[in-house]
Image (cartoon, rainbow, N blue to C red; front, side):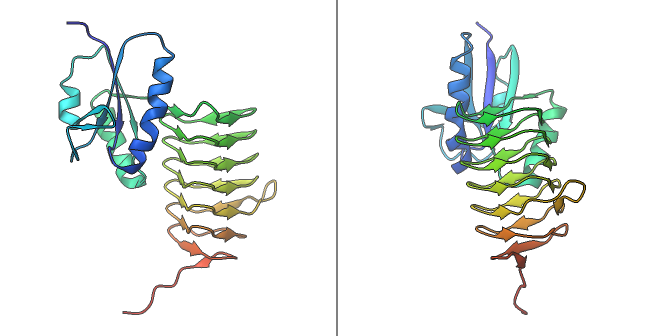
Length: 221
């Protein structure tokens, strides 16, 4: 039996189906045999878009010279738990990057990122582990982004911004540029709603919406 490298995208729902083709395009350039599957603990079907769908336990049981995975789960606390699970089993993480991603000077990017088509990372940026940047989003100069941060499509993250761990930035949100030494800060676990225009820092755990972005006030029960 030939033992080959095993690659997987964790998650066979919407986002996983969008990004698995990026993995296939990358791996086809390596000129070595590989197997690429979906991993999902609640498989919707035995196959999806021409690739097998295995549970995590089934995937671990496959013969492999190496085992590599990317966690395509938008919910960041679940993403972190899955990362910890994979780490405990000695699974390695690989980056998914569209061929037309633009990355300029002095960008530090943590492991396990997903960079979808038309993403731009400009210069002097530091990004943590397992970052998701969806279609047409960008990160401008002098930004610092934490671990398990998620950008929906079309996020405009301007310069001198700090985004802490587990923040979620919704589709089409615009974050106003900060100042050198006085960055605009999106706090840990904060949510910026789709289309929001953020002009000032957002506290940890807060949800902001609108233009200009304001805290979301839930109606009284």
